[in-house]
Amino acid sequence: MDADQRRREELAAFLRDRRARVDRAALGLPAAARGRVPGLRREEVATLAGVSVTWYTWLEQARDINPSRQVLDALGRLFGLRPVELTYLRTLGGHGELTPAAESTERAPARLRRLLESFPFPAFLLAEDWSIIGWNPAYAQLYPRIETLDADDRNLLWLLFTDESLRRMLPDWAEQSRRFVGEFRAEARRWLAASREDGIVTRVSAASADFARIWQERDVAGFVSRERTFRHPVRGNTVYEQHGVVPSEFPDLELILYVPAEPAS
Image 1: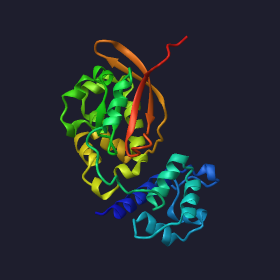
Image 2 (image 1 turned 120 degrees about the vertical axis):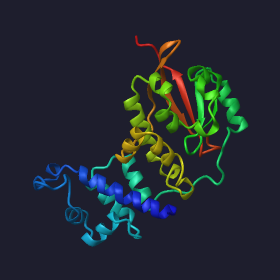
Image 3 (image 1 turned 90 degrees about the vertical axis):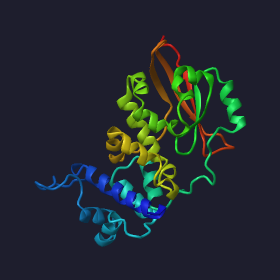
Image 4 (image 1 turned 180 degrees about the horizontal axis):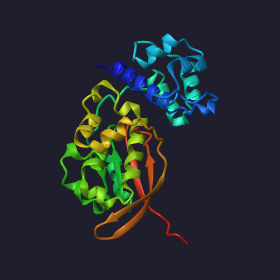
């Protein structure tokens, strides 16, 4: 399956999912008849979005058609999508960048390695598929396993769902893991490009029923800086502020910084 077909398949699934989530009462519509799935019927979506039933049905069947940005925006308004979800919908509809990096990066560029090592707090570097390709000594102290893992296993999604020691370090694992999956999905180019077909999503889905279930829920989340709590086996609970920084020279990479949180006054 090529990248365009995968994009259309995901668009179809996303539309079906969001159509089922619509609150009919908020649109002044009667409750769904007994035995029907919640949300809107295709005919209702077509009428309210101003498109033909046949055309909208083709969208949900992943047909090879090209929806305009205006139609996608109308569907976004109808489904009550948040800005990050609307951006995702536009990308799936062909109005976003899906081209992967020209060359995969397997280790941190020297300049970024020096930058990482200058931070006194934990920091690491993510490649496009969330492989961890660089880290500093403070991060190795927080998560010592990073130094002994095989390169193929040094991936944030993989570790989050397969490393029991990491899960024990996260008292809010259920919330954070769901958040990370939503952030990863929002970056569609990381996993929808043809070269990603057998990539990290397929691998983690096969290894973790938790990930497979959360991935199929199709939640989308934009990155936000936030507090992260780690239950360190030696130092006890440690609280950081997590920040993400994209280097202007390397836009396919992302620096993740764990800045010590200010103690509560």
